[in-house]
Image (cartoon, rainbow, N blue to C red; front, side, top):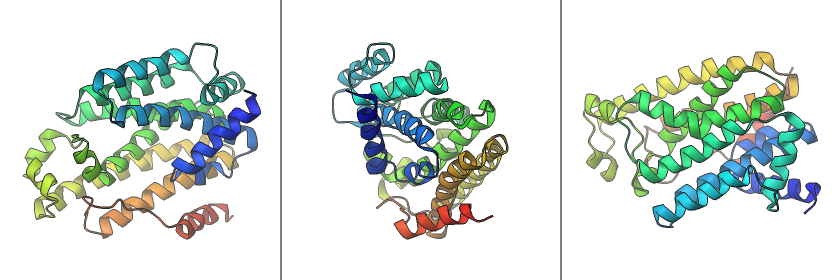
Length: 272
């Protein structure tokens, strides 16, 4: 498969699957847009494998195959595009391998004792995306790239409580559930208790603090890269605002922004 055809495939995957990412990368120059799409498509393959319906041992075998493919002669379009992007922008192998480690962790661990434990997981599944993308943006600010990735994952965790419960997972730290008086039966029943609202308010404040810190990354980026990152961070921020306004009812259908609202966020970033 040609590199151009491979990039066309990963861009299509990103348009189809990335609800916020694709709106950010649309403002990038072509080569950067292609490279970020290649990273996303690889992360998507890892996530889909970890969340799929296969038995855990089969998932783990497939995840290790994805890791091995980082070093082999690629034939799959995702890996053809990813190899070219890595060579072109110096994307390191380590964060891509960390994504696989995060996928493996999802097949082995479904509860987190405290926030330090959860943060370690977020570093693998989201902070690693930041570390893979930051050389494409032309920055070496890995600290804020990691922090921003963690922030976005914390927002995902809040948004996806109900969906994750149905997958058998609770990412909210167990010690914090206990401290706020929220039991897993409350999550199962979707109870919007005062205790639940207090817990979610606490988690929201922490996610916003991580987001604010991570956005210091923008100071090291050129204008279009900063617009890209600022756009999808803005979309996540608005999603979190909607969840809060809705009383943290995250047990049914996911909160999603409309296409016009997403385009409005992009347009806001384009204003001088």
